[in-house]
Amino acid sequence: MIEFIEKGKVDMEVVYIHPIWADIHSHYINNKLSLIYIYDIQSGRELVVNIGNTDHHTTHINHLTFDFKEAFVFGKKSFLNLIQLPYMYDADLIKYLQVNEQLKRNQTPCHSFFYRKFHNVRGVNNLIPIGKHIESIRKTKDEFLQHYDSENGITEEAKKFDNFYIKSLHDIEKNGLYTSNGFEHSQYNIYTTTSRPSNTFNGVNYAALNKEDGSRSRFISRFDGGKLIQFDYDAYHPRIIGKMVGEPISNEVSGHQVLADMYGVSYDESKAITFRQLYGGVQDEYLHIPLFQKTSHWIDLNWMEFNRNGYVKTPLGRKLKKGNFRNMNANKLFNYMLQATETELNVRIISKINGFLKDKKSKLMLYTYDSYLLDIHPQEFSLLNQLKILIEGNGFKSKVEIGDNYSEMKPIEIENKQENII
Image 1 (cartoon, one colour):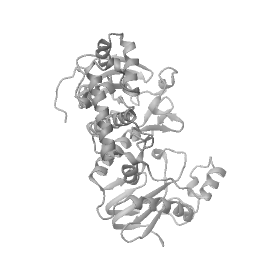
Image 2: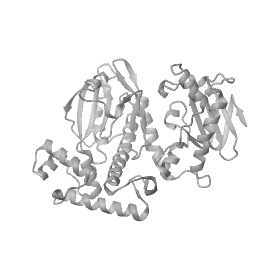
Image 3: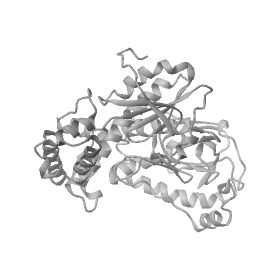
Image 4: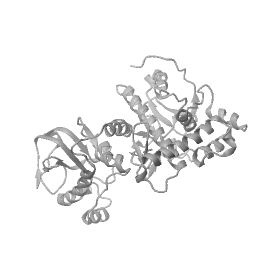
């Protein structure tokens, strides 16, 4: 039976929390809550905090306090914008780490009708009867409970992923990208096949902004006199692979130039050859090169382990399980491991950057696989050396560019002095 609560303290042990946002089109940064559903996993008690729905008396979230031993939130990354609770974890993550999929987004016929009929109405979820929201939420809650281990609780693996992925990417989204027309906000989705996040919102793919059509030029600094600074890893994937297989590429020179010298071809030609080796399988004619000889051997060993144990582990401990993938082969598995490793290295760095900038004006505004775009306040250009040290903290060399907009960036040199970073 549903209990509506309007004020006071909600004190429970372990709960599932499912927020409903009022508007279906707005980014959560600019959105409001319609209601919050809270389920006590031990007692089965169901609470609803109605914030904006027209179907019942409303309250304000500030009228309540919450005391939970553990809380599993549907869409924690968004929820963090309004409420931050200790021991709060993303509900999707519990299923994802087991079967490589996120929880289903359920929609009743009533939802379909309202979304179709009132597609352009702001706050349409406030018009849908609360009972229909509950009907949808319960299906997702029940699915979550199928994957949640009530006896042993959350695993250390899940805590680690939640800490690095959810909070780190939320902080970037919250910072936003400033444009000539005001702020835009990206939205990362980590629940992909490899865990490499996609980043699309409102029809814009922020993970693949076109470099040639001028669409990047709208992104500018939010600060008067500020600059955009991009740190871009040099030959990132070849360098990651070099470390994975025990044949690291020196940071003293360009990674692609090192490979070009190995092939005996030009710099530009080398990129195409490297791409084929890394994503299409190592060709016999390049097996004499130690990096590719060891890579080929590593691929074979990784494939044998996958078939023998039924899984392989990423550096952060996520299991890529044989039962979760169809039509897997040795080279595809290698690419999945490479992308997962890349992402896990990145989220650690993002966490450090966000921590370093926490009490400063400058912002990390975009992360795209092998680069970080920052909006630097004019009084904080002195931070660039410390940022470079942080970003190269995993041992990978970066190139740095500066610009008044994201389309017109020019290379700069930053002296990498080893300083203490507070």
